[in-house]
Image (cartoon, rainbow, N blue to C red; front, side):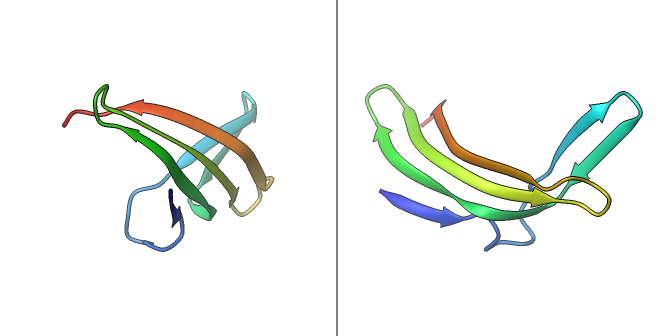
Length: 76
C-alpha cells in the first residue's frame, strides 16, 4: 500500500470544475489530499485505491471529498 500526496507535484496536471446552477461555474486547481494505492492486480490489469481531498477556488465553495474509491484498468 502506497500513499501519494496530491499537492506534492505542483506542475503536474490536475483540474476540476463544478456548477451550482447554469449561471455559476467554479474551476478548481488547488488540491490538498492524497491517493492511496491499495491493490495492483497484475493478472487483470486493475489498480485499486482510495482518495480524499479538499479543493478550492476564489469565490467558490470549498469541496471536501472523503472516502473516495477507484478501480482503474491499465494497459501494461
